[in-house]
Length: 612
Image (cartoon, rainbow, N blue to C red; front, side):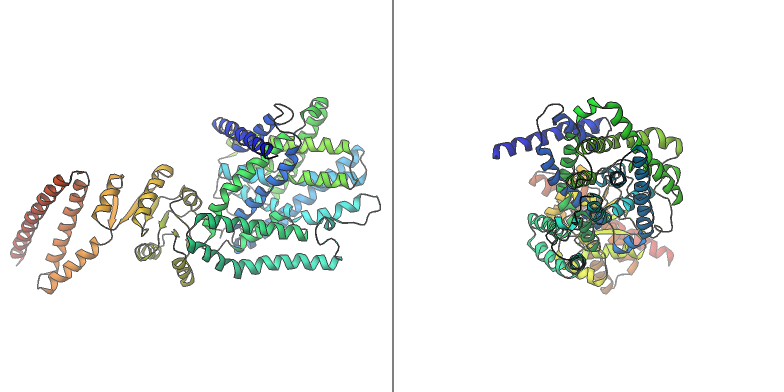
């Protein structure tokens, strides 16, 4: 058993490692790469994996839960409230209109009204995993199309519960059971289940507001990344279990948990801790979808399945395009929105199995729809690629500047400056920039300092800035400047190396404690180095000269001359490696400084006598 597990793990990982880079090289996107890998290793081709793909899919669906949690972290409650018109209006209209249209067509073809309504509900669902992944890869998640797509997908997740409650009523076999019987609370009466659902939501809200912050603070003080990763996974898994117990969608519960932590100082660290697991599980999910495509059935009924897939995609695209027009989406944005959501989603697999078990649909319909769902999902990356290459250039460039009453106030965490380290040094720089209306994103790894600054009212996030994934989440790809104000000099050098490798476009303004560290930073290629004691020392020297009776202008001018010479000297001395040569060079520069300062004083005295 253990050998089989490792072999299957190796097969899935090998398929991903081989096919995803190939797909990305040909600019097909990672989603299509995962799907192709699944098809390749599946029963229809190499037969490296078989029926266990269904079990793997149930495990991999947890990646969708994690994705919704991360999305919730990006969406503060106030922003979610601003999306209400899109979620309820656009999302509700899509679900109802697509279901009714699918019902009418299926009923006209000859299916019973129960089967027709079930098919209508199934095809109304879209793939949260595929759509959001593609939107993120293309950079369209902040556009009006991306926001509208998210609103529709979120409403579909919210609609899962009433859908599962309605389907058993269509079976016609006299059963009085409901979807809630599949949960641990199925024995409760209706009012008891309702209270349980409300109680679960209240638990998440209360725990998110009062319990999780102290726990995160304790984990942060350990300064062990694996502990923060563990508490992050524990949180998501715990929410998923609680939602499953009461019969709600785990993805919806995870999204709610993420929204409650969107204002947390630990938001970026949570996101970076979960992101690798989310990516792997989503990739595994796409691969299992590819492996479940029944190419034998497709070869038996190619015309029927092709017509069915194309009809559904066209039908949904038309409905979505009309709704997009009603909700004032521009043509280019509407093309992304309508074609992106035109497939049938992963939740259709659950609905089909549930409908088959309830006796609503036959085995033939189930097999046919299973193949249709998988193919429609596999076609989505290709459709989006063709849309990007052929359709969008003819309409207009994709713009992220679309304005809408719901979104004018939505702020993106893509500030031009990131400050790493917010002690006394970074705090001073940050307050100065913010006083000039320059927005900054602040990261600090001292949980106590972060907690204090948040209580003061400053928006500071907890996280280790030396992690490139955290920097990416904090907006390093879009930022222009990174101010490195971390107190630990070893961490500063680690961060410099990380930025040079992953974000070479960033201007780095670096704090240095002393000359030795400044030498190391210069040898690392830094051009903007700020020794934290230099300016203060010179200011103190100026005050000392004034107390001794020197003119203020003379003292300030002398400090400026000293500063310029010292900066030039620093660059020269940083290139010397031999200790003896360094000592000789330092002595030469000290003599040079004495001569320069003497000449500057004489020049100042001559100018002063001329003026008087």
